[in-house]
Image (tube, rainbow, N blue to C red; front, side):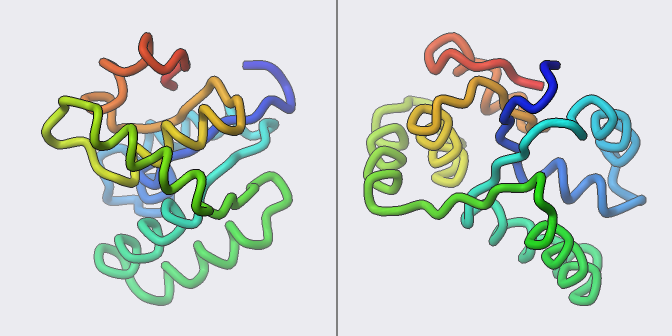
Length: 140
């Protein structure tokens, strides 16, 4: 992976990385070495998912520590889903035929399009793999 490139990172990566009992924890640890020199981009929606799930599955204290870590990390850019991104997310959501794709995942696709980011780290391969060609991105 190119040094200092931007990559959108889905909530499931951070959740697996911060939870040693997660079945994807070791895979997340291994991927960390591949992406550590890149600018990570998440949205406020992704941040919200991370905080909610970490609080429920790990602990409120762990969620707060993870949140502080993300907010204070200069290699993590948090993008706000503004009105234009929200509308683009809605267009994607309403046009895709996939039954189980979440609105948050559609917001990731909208963010990739608007910010011209071509790399996505997600463990939601079932959702994102079929969309790689249509939305022109690399799934890591």
